[in-house]
Image (cartoon, rainbow, N blue to C red; front, side):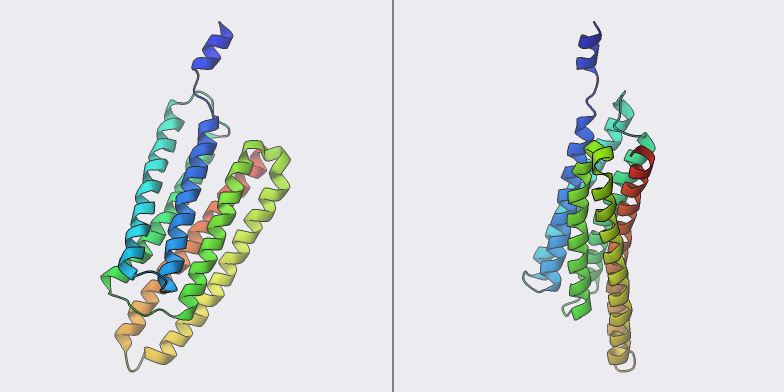
Length: 214
């Protein structure tokens, strides 16, 4: 009877699969951003790709939140699960907000620092994608998870420096002669910075889970 009951209970493994699926959308969105800022693909095509990844991420987030409500057993605290998936979703959403700003203001030229920050976002997203499968065995993987999250925090710090450097250059170049170009560029920089901030939030959520469950 007990074994039959256990077979009917929701399996906690699906949470890890959903985290991995969401991380894949995050990497896809970040890669599309990199291609856009590098001008490897047309801006409209890149923005559409980012929007597609954002929609996929929303779908996975809804699945996770529904699974949390319906599952009798979860791999770790429900609040930790919802916190992690929400922070991951916020990162992808901020990528989409970046694309929307570029579309809204019809931006066609990008500063080198914008491309560098986008590249850091893609690197951080890949670190998240490496980290989430390790949550299946937190005790065994605690050290590696700590190292991965520290790398993400370091990338966010580098992005802050690039953001400051880029804004200064943008101001010196455009503030007097082309003020609108400065304001639009500042808006794009702000969204890019928030992408890295949200990725750092993901790292913080993972680190919190490690601390609570290692």
